[in-house]
Length: 158
Length: 158
DNA sequence: GCAATAATGGGAACGGTTTTCATTACCGAT
DNA sequence: ATCGGTAATGAAAACCGTTCCCATTATTGC
Image (cartoon, each protein chain N blue to C red):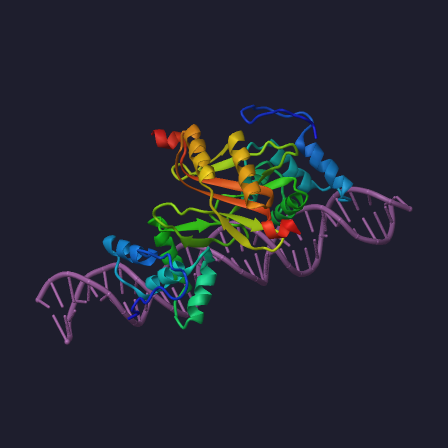
């Protein structure tokens, strides 16, 4: 699980990448290689934040790849089952997905009602607080999802 | 019609009921009275937790009321615009709604992957932490939604 | 290479939500 | 009271994201 201490503000590419990890995992699980799956994984690996199936479709088509929307949903589902992607639901009836990095690197989202953007953020104290809440509830919490609604820094400044 | 005979059975802590507050607000906003709106508001007022539009539809139909699903969505949207209901999204592509009480009384949800139940909870410290996060981001956060996934207290006790 | 079969893509099917539109009902003016 | 303008309503159609189905394509073990 590569103790890659990387943060989001960093740009550029990663080394022992998520996509390699994912592809290896797929092979280990007995899946065959396939163009659509590789394309989706590759695209997701490049992202800083979540994408919807339609966005993935559009970008792959835009990049010359001819993937079917059904394949995208299939791959996303497989990735989700293996817990290799996180499903992000910011409302509006569209599911978004983003790479789930093994050792944490967990973030949440602010949905700006001004510009419509989805802003990612992370906060260690918040995570600690969430752990405390889970403990108080006596629940074994496997994951959580938080969405803030409001005006992002840019829009609230305007 | 419909002499709003609210307060059915148990639940002794109603006070200045939510439905009255809502109906008054609607009138103040210049809305006309209407059967469908009253029915939805009345039903939501009785709930302890969130309902989907379809559930509202079924319950009202079951109660002999002939409301159209379109009216339900319309009323829910109006309520949401006025911030009188909270939209709860626990995934699965269905939106759920619950009464939003003016002075706080704000809760979140744990979706148990063992028994499938939706457990509501509230936590003041968590809310404070969320406020802090909003401030750190420089965003003007109007609301937030948190869903925990995992095994609830009962299921994790095994 | 060859066959078995998983992976893929197009399109139809599906379910929740939104829109449209004719009808009904509310409310203010008379 | 009733009349008229118009908001509210409900049925059905449209819409859209997602899932299903199936013929075709591509990968893998042999």
